[in-house]
Length: 336
Image (cartoon, rainbow, N blue to C red; front, top):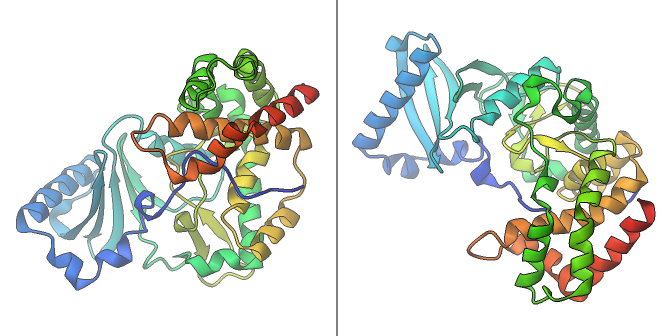
């Protein structure tokens, strides 16, 4: 099994992690940038959200706005002497993370502890002060024991699919597939952007894309996290062997086990990646062949939707421009 570094459509960073901002925002210079109006507005937003959850906000001691992005708001708060993270979502699509937490809890997949929730808000434990978990740092992803712990979390996630197989269960109706972006029109759109819209090879690929999508869905499709990065990782503080919990579920969806494992190992150091592969075990080799084609195609479809071509899609663009993408298509056709 050879899980190479990922070609992936999106990548998490501190901006996508609810905890990536916390330690930095505790510094005095950043706190000084918060003006009174911001604090007043934030306190009112938090107060309303907490009251919807049924809390008495008389003892709301402080509110520290962490960020607001795309209508989503993140706050550190202290309620009745206890610190929490409050995450409010600005639109129904983003609020799917509330449903994701509920689904994973029902399936007994370890998550960051949820204190309370509404349809568009989560109140979460603050990992900076948790007795059980701590935020990972960049050094952690080079450690073999962390690779083993991640493999355990991912096996639990991937093996919890019986209730969500193909989205049959009503709780999983929010789950999406990245391959849904692959259509004959989107493939020809990519071809047009690289000057290949008149190419017979691109036309043949576009004509077979529905068949390829069906092959992916007929594989060992399961719950997938899709966007691993160390800023979305928590590790046990005192347990040995170490335990891992991955958080931030805004891209939780349905996909192939191989793709999700490749996504993880592409962000780990060599020792941790080798330990992950060994601890996780084998995946279907057919999925590797499918992933080598659909991953860069998904990356290109997403990249060309943006006003500026992102750096994470450069490797995929090279595959398209050199014709390697068509060699990969030929290998997929051989296994269909």
